[in-house]
Image (cartoon, rainbow, N blue to C red; front, side, top):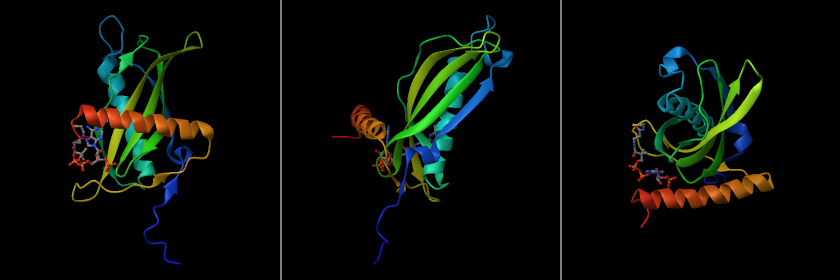
Amino acid sequence: MDNSNVRIQKSPEDSKAETTIVMLPSDANPKGNVFGGVILKHVDLIAGVVAKRHANQANVVTASIDRMTFIKPIFIGNALILSAKINYVKRSSVEIEVNIHAEDLDYNSRVHAGRAFVTMVAIDRYGKPMEVPQLLLNTEEEKIRFKQGEERMKARLREAGKLL
Ligand SMILES: CC(C)(COP(=O)(O)OP(=O)(O)OC[C@H]1O[C@@H](n2cnc3c(N)ncnc32)[C@H](O)[C@@H]1OP(=O)(O)O)[C@@H](O)C(=O)NCCC(=O)NCCS
């Protein structure tokens, strides 16, 4: 049988990532509050790792980061813990959910500090968007996250004037 036009599938588990970074004085303002831009940089980086894994190591670029709210402050000396997983795959674009936690390493306490949805697009060597594997959904939770991701993608494309 010819399988040449069957799109391969990868599960969210295949590409998920987690990282822990201790926040330093250079990451924060003089009062010790970590800059939002520093957190965003790490959100962008980890989403890129997940997207690149899913896209079989193709080049990936950030198309959009949904509005981000910082729920709790993060301070110098805290561990910034990011966990990232794919929710939704279209053709060349993928939605990655990044959850942000801050751990106070002196008191062994952890808070949920924020969440971001990042859209990354896989591009070929000419900079043209290229197809990535479909998402293999193994659990009920993954199916729900996919559906919600699809709705968010429609909304963000509408907002960007890309969905008529
Ligand atoms: C992202 C980019 C590759 C899209 O290219 P494009 O010419 O607009 O291509 P298309 O309109 O065909 O869209 C390609 C895919 O991107 C998605 N896309 C485009 N703009 C998007 C947006 N604002 N939000 C979410 N997805 C978007 C499309 O839905 C499409 O997805 P699909 O292939 O899964 O259906 C292009 O806009 C780009 O290179 N942007 C700069 C990326 C970058 O440098 N980021 C770093 C920060 S500056």
